[in-house]
Image 1 (cartoon, rainbow, N blue to C red):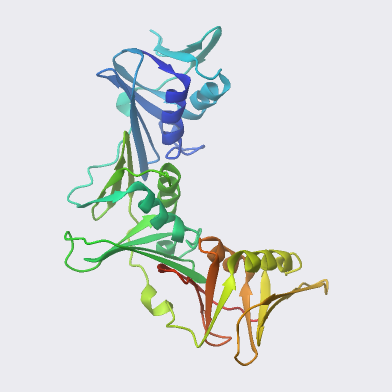
Image 2 (image 1 turned 90 degrees about the vertical axis):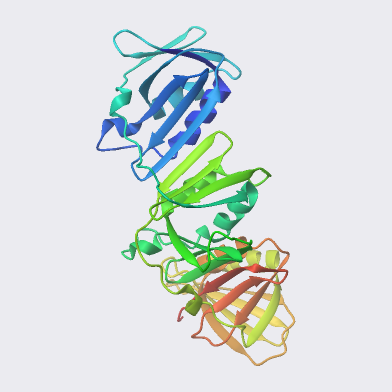
Length: 369
């Protein structure tokens, strides 16, 4: 078998599939990418048995066949070759692959295509279409709050909820929660149904989606899998088998205290004050007095930082502590020029929202300083 393809087309296909391929694997074939040539197209597929990414593209010239190639080595070779060049990949009689471009020659080991695993059929599924940019916003807006290697395995992922009137994503690590609601009429469900996407699947799908794309993504969601089809790329991930906690109970009602703050000024102030916060707990104290918001931090070396911001507030003095990283994450995922901070008591969760967009709600648990 043989293919001739432009460097850019080849690299695009390889970089898409690399997201599903682990750098070090117990099985050598899982470090490879499956290449199939048929009908003047190249088909590439990578998997780690939990996640699978497949893509295809037209070829300049080709001879049909299938083989698996070391994915990262091949991608690194393509990156190192000149832009706009033509690359030839040819499988030799000894089943080694010769990659050539101009005077450059690389000989790679291969493994048989028939040994390459594939995910099982996803079975019966809910099917819907969603603009690519909107799906990216759904995932991007909440993915930052996912847990990482938590023993509560269902938190190491993102909840996707389908309801007759909306799509919703939710993530939480037990210290903060992020929720995004996308209004959409869904006649495929009669009541709310929930699925948990694994952390790696969320990260890789978000990486593949484009924020400026207007084309539709086809989503298929079954009991065990989610599949997204966009252009020539097919993304499939297994779902997490578990029950997500009742996130509705964790979202506080409208706060007793509600202040509107300039987003950039507040973010810059928190970033400055965080420099002298405790490196382990990253705690900052927010103090509210009439028309002034003060943020303070200190550390075990007895160093302190303080900054003030003018706001509109006419209530009583109020103090509350937060992990500054959680607060900054919530602010960074709101695009408006201002944010609303809603508070009830020093022991109660705070709500960070966009005053012009009710779709996004970020909840942060306070800490004791």
